[in-house]
Image (cartoon, rainbow, N blue to C red; front, side):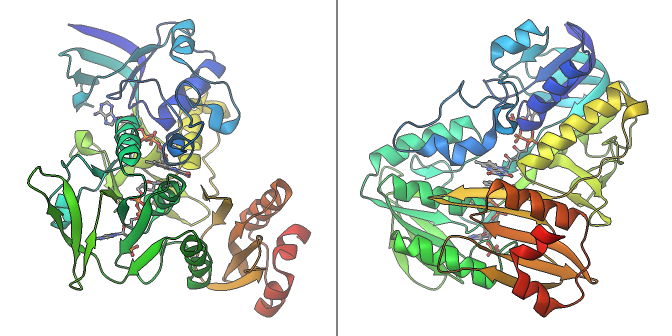
Length: 426
Ligand code: FAD
Ligand code: NDP
Protein backbone atom coordinates (compact mmCIF):
# COMPACT_ATOMS: atom_id res chain seq x y z
CA UNK A 1 0.00 0.00 0.00
CA UNK A 2 1.42 3.41 -0.88
CA UNK A 3 0.76 6.95 -2.00
CA UNK A 4 2.94 9.74 -3.36
CA UNK A 5 2.73 13.49 -2.72
CA UNK A 6 4.87 16.41 -3.88
CA UNK A 7 4.92 17.74 -0.30
CA UNK A 8 4.74 15.84 2.99
CA UNK A 9 4.91 17.18 6.56
CA UNK A 10 5.69 14.79 9.43
CA UNK A 11 4.09 16.06 12.62
CA UNK A 12 0.79 17.85 13.12
CA UNK A 13 1.64 20.55 15.64
CA UNK A 14 2.11 24.29 15.52
CA UNK A 15 4.65 24.34 12.70
CA UNK A 16 2.59 21.96 10.54
CA UNK A 17 -0.49 24.18 10.84
CA UNK A 18 1.37 27.35 9.91
CA UNK A 19 3.14 25.54 7.07
CA UNK A 20 -0.22 24.32 5.69
CA UNK A 21 -1.61 27.86 5.62
CA UNK A 22 1.52 29.15 3.92
CA UNK A 23 1.32 26.40 1.27
CA UNK A 24 -2.20 27.53 0.37
CA UNK A 25 -1.06 31.17 0.20
CA UNK A 26 1.68 30.11 -2.23
CA UNK A 27 -0.78 28.43 -4.60
CA UNK A 28 -0.92 24.80 -3.46
CA UNK A 29 -3.17 22.59 -5.62
CA UNK A 30 -5.55 19.93 -4.29
CA UNK A 31 -3.89 16.60 -3.55
CA UNK A 32 -0.36 17.99 -3.34
CA UNK A 33 0.15 18.15 0.44
CA UNK A 34 -0.05 15.40 3.04
CA UNK A 35 0.36 15.91 6.82
CA UNK A 36 0.98 12.85 8.99
CA UNK A 37 0.42 13.30 12.73
CA UNK A 38 0.30 10.85 15.59
CA UNK A 39 -2.12 13.16 17.41
CA UNK A 40 -5.82 12.45 16.80
CA UNK A 41 -6.73 16.09 16.06
CA UNK A 42 -5.81 18.70 13.45
CA UNK A 43 -2.91 21.06 14.32
CA UNK A 44 -3.60 23.39 17.24
CA UNK A 45 -1.93 26.19 19.17
CA UNK A 46 0.01 24.17 21.76
CA UNK A 47 0.50 27.16 24.14
CA UNK A 48 -3.23 27.09 24.91
CA UNK A 49 -2.76 23.79 26.77
CA UNK A 50 -1.00 25.42 29.74
CA UNK A 51 -3.20 28.51 29.74
CA UNK A 52 -6.87 28.75 28.63
CA UNK A 53 -7.29 24.95 28.51
CA UNK A 54 -6.65 24.75 32.27
CA UNK A 55 -8.97 27.56 33.32
CA UNK A 56 -11.50 26.42 35.94
CA UNK A 57 -14.23 28.41 34.20
CA UNK A 58 -14.96 28.79 30.48
CA UNK A 59 -11.84 26.82 29.49
CA UNK A 60 -10.63 26.86 25.86
CA UNK A 61 -11.49 23.73 23.94
CA UNK A 62 -11.02 22.62 20.35
CA UNK A 63 -11.99 23.69 17.75
CA UNK A 64 -11.42 27.09 19.42
CA UNK A 65 -7.63 27.00 19.28
CA UNK A 66 -6.71 25.25 16.06
CA UNK A 67 -3.83 26.95 14.26
CA UNK A 68 -3.48 29.64 13.12
CA UNK A 69 -5.58 31.73 15.54
CA UNK A 70 -2.50 32.45 17.66
CA UNK A 71 -1.19 34.80 14.98
CA UNK A 72 -4.61 36.28 14.17
CA UNK A 73 -4.80 34.23 11.01
CA UNK A 74 -7.48 31.91 9.71
CA UNK A 75 -8.55 29.04 12.00
CA UNK A 76 -7.71 25.77 10.28
CA UNK A 77 -10.44 23.34 11.33
CA UNK A 78 -10.45 19.76 9.95
CA UNK A 79 -12.90 21.03 7.34
CA UNK A 80 -10.42 23.66 6.16
CA UNK A 81 -7.94 20.89 5.24
CA UNK A 82 -10.70 19.10 3.29
CA UNK A 83 -11.67 22.25 1.45
CA UNK A 84 -8.06 22.83 0.45
CA UNK A 85 -7.50 19.26 -0.69
CA UNK A 86 -4.87 18.62 2.01
CA UNK A 87 -4.57 15.01 3.12
CA UNK A 88 -4.55 15.02 6.92
CA UNK A 89 -3.55 11.59 8.22
CA UNK A 90 -4.24 11.68 11.97
CA UNK A 91 -3.57 9.22 14.77
CA UNK A 92 -0.76 7.77 12.67
CA UNK A 93 2.91 7.72 13.49
CA UNK A 94 5.76 7.72 11.00
CA UNK A 95 7.79 4.73 12.12
CA UNK A 96 10.73 5.05 9.78
CA UNK A 97 12.05 7.36 7.10
CA UNK A 98 14.47 6.82 4.25
CA UNK A 99 15.67 10.16 2.92
CA UNK A 100 17.70 8.55 0.10
CA UNK A 101 14.59 6.83 -1.26
CA UNK A 102 12.27 9.67 -0.17
CA UNK A 103 9.91 7.30 1.62
CA UNK A 104 8.15 7.20 4.97
CA UNK A 105 6.60 4.13 6.57
CA UNK A 106 3.60 4.72 8.84
CA UNK A 107 2.17 2.65 11.69
CA UNK A 108 -0.77 1.85 9.37
CA UNK A 109 1.71 -0.01 7.15
CA UNK A 110 1.48 2.61 4.39
CA UNK A 111 4.53 3.79 2.46
CA UNK A 112 4.35 7.47 1.59
CA UNK A 113 6.67 8.93 -1.01
CA UNK A 114 7.50 12.64 -1.23
CA UNK A 115 9.38 15.10 -3.42
CA UNK A 116 9.86 17.56 -0.55
CA UNK A 117 9.66 16.62 3.12
CA UNK A 118 9.17 19.02 6.05
CA UNK A 119 10.10 17.58 9.43
CA UNK A 120 7.90 19.17 12.12
CA UNK A 121 7.98 16.51 14.82
CA UNK A 122 8.47 18.91 17.76
CA UNK A 123 9.58 17.75 21.19
CA UNK A 124 8.77 15.15 23.79
CA UNK A 125 8.80 15.61 27.55
CA UNK A 126 11.70 14.42 29.68
CA UNK A 127 10.28 11.63 31.85
CA UNK A 128 10.92 11.18 35.57
CA UNK A 129 12.61 7.83 34.88
CA UNK A 130 15.30 9.70 32.90
CA UNK A 131 16.32 11.44 36.14
CA UNK A 132 16.11 8.24 38.17
CA UNK A 133 12.58 8.56 39.63
CA UNK A 134 9.79 5.99 39.11
CA UNK A 135 6.13 6.83 38.77
CA UNK A 136 5.34 8.27 35.34
CA UNK A 137 2.49 5.81 34.84
CA UNK A 138 0.69 6.61 38.10
CA UNK A 139 -2.84 7.95 37.61
CA UNK A 140 -2.09 11.22 39.42
CA UNK A 141 1.30 12.01 37.83
CA UNK A 142 0.89 14.47 34.96
CA UNK A 143 3.04 15.80 32.13
CA UNK A 144 1.99 18.47 29.67
CA UNK A 145 2.88 18.21 26.01
CA UNK A 146 -0.23 17.31 24.05
CA UNK A 147 -4.00 17.29 24.21
CA UNK A 148 -4.10 13.85 25.88
CA UNK A 149 -1.76 15.09 28.65
CA UNK A 150 -3.83 18.26 29.10
CA UNK A 151 -7.07 16.27 29.29
CA UNK A 152 -5.58 13.97 31.95
CA UNK A 153 -4.31 17.00 33.87
CA UNK A 154 -7.77 18.61 33.89
CA UNK A 155 -9.35 15.37 35.15
CA UNK A 156 -6.75 14.97 37.88
CA UNK A 157 -7.10 18.62 38.95
CA UNK A 158 -10.87 18.24 39.23
CA UNK A 159 -10.39 15.40 41.73
CA UNK A 160 -7.84 17.41 43.76
CA UNK A 161 -9.72 20.59 44.70
CA UNK A 162 -8.28 21.92 47.99
CA UNK A 163 -5.64 19.17 47.87
CA UNK A 164 -1.85 19.36 47.45
CA UNK A 165 0.11 19.37 44.22
CA UNK A 166 3.86 19.14 43.79
CA UNK A 167 5.21 20.79 40.66
CA UNK A 168 8.60 19.32 39.76
CA UNK A 169 10.57 21.91 37.75
CA UNK A 170 10.70 25.70 37.82
CA UNK A 171 10.77 26.38 34.07
CA UNK A 172 8.00 27.29 31.65
CA UNK A 173 5.73 24.31 32.37
CA UNK A 174 6.30 24.57 36.10
CA UNK A 175 5.46 28.27 36.25
CA UNK A 176 2.44 28.17 33.94
CA UNK A 177 0.98 25.02 35.52
CA UNK A 178 1.52 26.29 39.08
CA UNK A 179 -0.55 29.36 38.23
CA UNK A 180 -3.31 27.18 36.75
CA UNK A 181 -3.31 24.88 39.79
CA UNK A 182 -3.80 27.86 42.09
CA UNK A 183 -6.67 29.08 39.92
CA UNK A 184 -8.17 25.60 40.37
CA UNK A 185 -7.93 25.94 44.16
CA UNK A 186 -5.10 23.46 44.64
CA UNK A 187 -2.21 24.07 47.09
CA UNK A 188 1.08 24.13 45.22
CA UNK A 189 4.68 23.38 46.16
CA UNK A 190 7.24 23.93 43.40
CA UNK A 191 10.48 21.97 43.70
CA UNK A 192 13.52 22.67 41.53
CA UNK A 193 17.28 22.45 41.91
CA UNK A 194 18.21 25.98 40.81
CA UNK A 195 18.49 29.08 43.01
CA UNK A 196 15.43 30.73 41.42
CA UNK A 197 12.70 30.05 38.88
CA UNK A 198 13.20 30.35 35.10
CA UNK A 199 16.94 30.58 35.71
CA UNK A 200 17.88 30.29 32.04
CA UNK A 201 16.05 33.52 31.19
CA UNK A 202 15.20 35.52 34.31
CA UNK A 203 17.68 37.57 36.33
CA UNK A 204 17.53 37.00 40.12
CA UNK A 205 15.65 40.33 40.45
CA UNK A 206 13.02 39.39 37.86
CA UNK A 207 12.64 35.90 39.35
CA UNK A 208 12.20 37.39 42.80
CA UNK A 209 9.24 39.50 41.54
CA UNK A 210 7.45 36.43 40.12
CA UNK A 211 8.26 34.24 43.12
CA UNK A 212 6.86 36.91 45.47
CA UNK A 213 3.76 37.21 43.30
CA UNK A 214 3.29 33.42 43.36
CA UNK A 215 3.89 33.33 47.13
CA UNK A 216 1.15 35.94 47.55
CA UNK A 217 -1.14 33.42 45.83
CA UNK A 218 -0.06 30.69 48.27
CA UNK A 219 2.63 28.90 46.25
CA UNK A 220 5.43 27.34 48.32
CA UNK A 221 8.89 27.44 46.64
CA UNK A 222 11.37 24.71 47.55
CA UNK A 223 14.60 25.61 45.78
CA UNK A 224 18.09 24.21 45.60
CA UNK A 225 16.96 20.61 46.01
CA UNK A 226 15.03 18.06 44.00
CA UNK A 227 12.68 15.11 44.32
CA UNK A 228 14.56 11.85 44.92
CA UNK A 229 11.57 9.48 44.83
CA UNK A 230 7.79 9.39 44.91
CA UNK A 231 5.73 7.71 47.64
CA UNK A 232 2.88 5.41 46.54
CA UNK A 233 -0.14 3.88 48.29
CA UNK A 234 -1.15 0.24 47.82
CA UNK A 235 -3.16 1.16 44.68
CA UNK A 236 -0.15 2.71 42.99
CA UNK A 237 -1.34 6.26 43.49
CA UNK A 238 1.24 8.86 44.49
CA UNK A 239 0.73 10.24 48.01
CA UNK A 240 3.93 12.23 48.44
CA UNK A 241 7.51 12.86 47.44
CA UNK A 242 10.87 12.45 49.14
CA UNK A 243 13.32 15.28 48.59
CA UNK A 244 17.08 14.98 48.35
CA UNK A 245 17.44 17.22 51.41
CA UNK A 246 15.55 14.62 53.51
CA UNK A 247 12.14 16.32 53.61
CA UNK A 248 8.93 14.53 52.63
CA UNK A 249 6.00 16.42 51.07
CA UNK A 250 2.40 15.16 50.87
CA UNK A 251 0.81 15.14 47.41
CA UNK A 252 -2.55 14.43 45.82
CA UNK A 253 -1.05 15.04 42.40
CA UNK A 254 2.30 15.67 40.70
CA UNK A 255 3.07 17.77 37.64
CA UNK A 256 6.40 17.22 35.96
CA UNK A 257 8.07 19.93 33.85
CA UNK A 258 11.73 19.06 33.71
CA UNK A 259 12.47 19.89 30.10
CA UNK A 260 11.88 18.67 26.56
CA UNK A 261 13.90 16.81 23.91
CA UNK A 262 13.48 17.19 20.13
CA UNK A 263 11.89 14.25 18.26
CA UNK A 264 14.69 13.64 15.78
CA UNK A 265 15.28 9.87 16.10
CA UNK A 266 13.83 9.03 12.68
CA UNK A 267 16.70 10.89 11.04
CA UNK A 268 19.68 9.87 13.15
CA UNK A 269 22.48 8.84 10.80
CA UNK A 270 20.62 10.21 7.76
CA UNK A 271 20.90 13.99 8.22
CA UNK A 272 23.50 16.29 9.75
CA UNK A 273 22.80 17.32 13.36
CA UNK A 274 24.03 20.24 15.47
CA UNK A 275 23.20 21.18 19.07
CA UNK A 276 20.80 18.26 19.31
CA UNK A 277 18.70 19.41 16.36
CA UNK A 278 18.57 18.86 12.61
CA UNK A 279 21.06 21.28 11.10
CA UNK A 280 19.62 23.48 8.35
CA UNK A 281 20.78 26.40 6.24
CA UNK A 282 19.15 29.83 6.13
CA UNK A 283 16.36 28.35 3.96
CA UNK A 284 15.61 25.72 6.63
CA UNK A 285 16.96 23.07 4.26
CA UNK A 286 18.76 20.14 5.87
CA UNK A 287 21.88 18.32 4.63
CA UNK A 288 19.52 16.50 2.23
CA UNK A 289 18.21 19.07 -0.31
CA UNK A 290 14.70 17.55 -0.40
CA UNK A 291 14.30 17.68 3.37
CA UNK A 292 13.48 20.78 5.46
CA UNK A 293 13.21 20.98 9.26
CA UNK A 294 11.10 23.49 11.20
CA UNK A 295 9.98 24.22 14.75
CA UNK A 296 11.52 22.64 17.83
CA UNK A 297 13.62 20.11 15.88
CA UNK A 298 15.54 22.56 13.75
CA UNK A 299 19.01 23.96 14.51
CA UNK A 300 19.01 27.04 12.31
CA UNK A 301 21.44 29.90 11.75
CA UNK A 302 20.25 32.80 13.92
CA UNK A 303 21.98 35.84 12.41
CA UNK A 304 21.13 37.83 15.52
CA UNK A 305 23.20 35.44 17.67
CA UNK A 306 25.80 34.84 14.96
CA UNK A 307 25.32 31.19 15.80
CA UNK A 308 23.24 28.10 15.10
CA UNK A 309 20.51 27.53 17.68
CA UNK A 310 17.46 25.46 18.44
CA UNK A 311 14.56 27.55 19.75
CA UNK A 312 11.73 25.73 21.59
CA UNK A 313 9.12 28.46 21.34
CA UNK A 314 5.99 29.01 19.33
CA UNK A 315 7.05 32.12 17.40
CA UNK A 316 10.06 30.26 16.01
CA UNK A 317 7.83 27.32 15.04
CA UNK A 318 5.43 29.57 13.16
CA UNK A 319 8.12 31.56 11.37
CA UNK A 320 10.44 28.69 10.46
CA UNK A 321 7.41 26.83 9.06
CA UNK A 322 6.32 29.74 6.87
CA UNK A 323 9.86 30.34 5.70
CA UNK A 324 10.52 26.72 4.73
CA UNK A 325 7.33 26.62 2.65
CA UNK A 326 8.27 29.87 0.93
CA UNK A 327 11.76 28.50 0.24
CA UNK A 328 10.26 25.34 -1.31
CA UNK A 329 7.47 26.99 -3.35
CA UNK A 330 9.13 30.29 -4.27
CA UNK A 331 12.89 29.96 -3.78
CA UNK A 332 13.85 32.93 -6.00
CA UNK A 333 11.84 35.37 -3.86
CA UNK A 334 12.82 33.91 -0.51
CA UNK A 335 15.82 35.59 1.12
CA UNK A 336 17.68 33.91 3.99
CA UNK A 337 15.74 33.53 7.24
CA UNK A 338 16.50 36.43 9.58
CA UNK A 339 15.04 35.72 13.00
CA UNK A 340 14.77 37.86 16.11
CA UNK A 341 14.28 35.42 19.02
CA UNK A 342 11.02 36.14 20.85
CA UNK A 343 9.51 34.35 23.86
CA UNK A 344 6.51 35.16 26.03
CA UNK A 345 4.39 33.85 28.86
CA UNK A 346 1.12 34.70 30.59
CA UNK A 347 0.35 33.67 34.17
CA UNK A 348 -2.36 34.96 36.51
CA UNK A 349 -2.82 38.63 35.56
CA UNK A 350 0.83 38.88 34.48
CA UNK A 351 2.21 38.87 30.97
CA UNK A 352 5.79 39.26 29.78
CA UNK A 353 7.74 39.23 26.54
CA UNK A 354 11.43 38.82 25.82
CA UNK A 355 13.28 39.74 22.63
CA UNK A 356 16.88 38.95 21.68
CA UNK A 357 19.55 37.47 23.91
CA UNK A 358 20.17 37.61 27.68
CA UNK A 359 23.96 37.93 27.54
CA UNK A 360 26.41 40.61 28.68
CA UNK A 361 25.61 43.29 31.24
CA UNK A 362 22.06 43.75 32.46
CA UNK A 363 20.22 46.72 33.93
CA UNK A 364 16.69 46.79 35.32
CA UNK A 365 14.05 49.46 34.86
CA UNK A 366 10.52 50.32 35.89
CA UNK A 367 8.52 49.67 39.01
CA UNK A 368 9.23 46.27 40.51
CA UNK A 369 6.53 46.98 43.09
CA UNK A 370 4.04 47.74 40.37
CA UNK A 371 2.97 46.27 37.09
CA UNK A 372 5.44 47.47 34.44
CA UNK A 373 9.14 46.72 34.66
CA UNK A 374 11.88 44.89 32.87
CA UNK A 375 15.52 44.46 32.00
CA UNK A 376 17.86 45.45 29.18
CA UNK A 377 21.02 43.58 28.20
CA UNK A 378 24.07 45.21 26.60
CA UNK A 379 26.81 43.27 24.87
CA UNK A 380 29.71 44.69 22.81
CA UNK A 381 28.31 48.21 23.23
CA UNK A 382 24.89 47.31 21.78
CA UNK A 383 21.45 46.59 23.12
CA UNK A 384 20.97 42.81 22.61
CA UNK A 385 18.00 41.87 24.76
CA UNK A 386 14.92 43.22 26.48
CA UNK A 387 12.50 41.66 28.97
CA UNK A 388 9.28 43.55 29.66
CA UNK A 389 6.44 42.69 32.02
CA UNK A 390 3.16 44.49 31.61
CA UNK A 391 3.95 46.38 28.41
CA UNK A 392 1.48 47.61 25.85
CA UNK A 393 1.56 46.83 22.13
CA UNK A 394 3.50 50.02 21.32
CA UNK A 395 6.15 49.18 23.94
CA UNK A 396 6.64 45.72 22.48
CA UNK A 397 6.95 47.05 18.93
CA UNK A 398 9.54 49.57 20.13
CA UNK A 399 11.67 47.11 22.09
CA UNK A 400 11.58 44.55 19.29
CA UNK A 401 12.87 47.20 16.88
CA UNK A 402 15.56 48.54 19.24
CA UNK A 403 16.83 45.01 19.93
CA UNK A 404 16.69 43.96 16.28
CA UNK A 405 18.67 47.10 15.33
CA UNK A 406 21.16 46.40 18.13
CA UNK A 407 20.97 50.06 19.13
CA UNK A 408 24.30 51.45 20.37
CA UNK A 409 24.57 51.85 24.16
CA UNK A 410 27.54 53.98 25.16
CA UNK A 411 26.74 54.37 28.85
CA UNK A 412 25.18 51.62 30.95
CA UNK A 413 24.10 54.09 33.65
CA UNK A 414 22.29 56.14 31.02
CA UNK A 415 20.59 52.98 29.75
CA UNK A 416 19.43 52.19 33.28
CA UNK A 417 18.10 55.73 33.80
CA UNK A 418 16.29 55.77 30.45
CA UNK A 419 14.92 52.23 30.86
CA UNK A 420 12.08 51.50 28.49
CA UNK A 421 12.40 55.09 27.23
CA UNK A 422 15.70 54.11 25.62
CA UNK A 423 13.97 51.57 23.38
CA UNK A 424 11.07 53.87 22.63
CA UNK A 425 13.32 56.76 21.62
CA UNK A 426 15.87 55.02 19.36
P1 FAD B 1 4.80 20.51 18.18
O1 FAD B 1 3.83 21.62 18.26
O2 FAD B 1 5.19 19.81 19.43
O3 FAD B 1 4.22 19.45 17.15
C1 FAD B 1 4.90 18.26 16.83
C2 FAD B 1 3.89 17.27 16.30
O4 FAD B 1 4.55 16.17 15.70
C3 FAD B 1 3.00 16.68 17.38
O5 FAD B 1 1.67 16.66 16.91
C4 FAD B 1 3.54 15.27 17.55
O6 FAD B 1 2.60 14.40 18.07
C5 FAD B 1 3.93 14.96 16.11
N1 FAD B 1 4.88 13.87 15.91
C6 FAD B 1 6.08 13.69 16.51
N2 FAD B 1 6.70 12.60 16.02
C7 FAD B 1 5.89 12.08 15.08
C8 FAD B 1 5.97 10.95 14.21
N3 FAD B 1 7.03 10.14 14.20
N4 FAD B 1 4.93 10.69 13.37
C9 FAD B 1 3.84 11.52 13.36
N5 FAD B 1 3.72 12.59 14.16
C10 FAD B 1 4.73 12.87 14.99
N6 FAD B 1 6.01 28.63 23.37
C11 FAD B 1 5.88 29.99 23.49
O7 FAD B 1 6.64 30.73 22.85
N7 FAD B 1 4.93 30.54 24.29
C12 FAD B 1 4.10 29.78 25.03
O8 FAD B 1 3.28 30.31 25.77
C13 FAD B 1 4.21 28.36 24.95
N8 FAD B 1 3.41 27.56 25.66
C14 FAD B 1 3.56 26.20 25.60
C15 FAD B 1 2.74 25.40 26.38
C16 FAD B 1 2.89 24.01 26.36
C17 FAD B 1 2.00 23.16 27.21
C18 FAD B 1 3.89 23.42 25.56
C19 FAD B 1 4.07 21.93 25.55
C20 FAD B 1 4.72 24.21 24.77
C21 FAD B 1 4.55 25.61 24.79
N9 FAD B 1 5.35 26.46 24.01
C22 FAD B 1 5.21 27.81 24.09
C23 FAD B 1 6.32 25.88 23.08
C24 FAD B 1 5.69 25.72 21.69
O9 FAD B 1 4.39 25.21 21.81
C25 FAD B 1 6.54 24.80 20.83
O10 FAD B 1 7.80 25.42 20.66
C26 FAD B 1 5.87 24.53 19.50
O11 FAD B 1 4.69 23.80 19.69
C27 FAD B 1 6.79 23.76 18.57
O12 FAD B 1 6.09 23.50 17.40
P2 FAD B 1 6.43 22.18 16.53
O13 FAD B 1 5.42 22.15 15.43
O14 FAD B 1 7.87 22.16 16.24
O15 FAD B 1 6.15 20.97 17.51
P1 NDP C 1 12.36 24.05 30.87
O1 NDP C 1 13.62 23.69 30.22
O2 NDP C 1 11.77 25.40 30.69
O3 NDP C 1 12.50 23.91 32.44
C1 NDP C 1 12.96 22.73 33.02
C2 NDP C 1 12.95 22.92 34.50
O4 NDP C 1 13.23 21.67 35.09
C3 NDP C 1 13.99 23.91 35.04
O5 NDP C 1 13.37 24.68 36.05
C4 NDP C 1 15.04 23.00 35.64
O6 NDP C 1 15.64 23.58 36.77
C5 NDP C 1 14.17 21.88 36.12
N1 NDP C 1 14.87 20.64 36.37
C6 NDP C 1 15.87 20.07 35.67
N2 NDP C 1 16.22 18.91 36.26
C7 NDP C 1 15.42 18.78 37.35
C8 NDP C 1 15.30 17.83 38.38
N3 NDP C 1 16.09 16.77 38.42
N4 NDP C 1 14.36 18.02 39.34
C9 NDP C 1 13.57 19.10 39.31
N5 NDP C 1 13.65 20.05 38.37
C10 NDP C 1 14.56 19.86 37.41
O7 NDP C 1 11.33 22.90 30.45
P2 NDP C 1 9.76 22.76 30.70
O8 NDP C 1 9.55 21.33 31.03
O9 NDP C 1 9.30 23.79 31.63
O10 NDP C 1 9.15 23.09 29.26
C11 NDP C 1 9.14 22.09 28.23
C12 NDP C 1 9.05 22.72 26.87
O11 NDP C 1 7.86 23.45 26.73
C13 NDP C 1 10.17 23.67 26.54
O12 NDP C 1 10.49 23.48 25.20
C14 NDP C 1 9.54 25.04 26.72
O13 NDP C 1 10.14 26.00 25.88
C15 NDP C 1 8.13 24.76 26.28
N6 NDP C 1 7.18 25.68 26.91
C16 NDP C 1 7.29 27.01 26.63
C17 NDP C 1 6.43 27.90 27.19
C18 NDP C 1 6.58 29.35 26.86
O14 NDP C 1 7.39 29.69 26.02
N7 NDP C 1 5.79 30.23 27.50
C19 NDP C 1 5.35 27.47 28.09
C20 NDP C 1 5.34 26.04 28.34
C21 NDP C 1 6.22 25.20 27.75
P3 NDP C 1 16.97 24.46 36.70
O15 NDP C 1 16.77 25.46 35.60
O16 NDP C 1 17.01 25.02 38.05
O17 NDP C 1 18.04 23.47 36.36
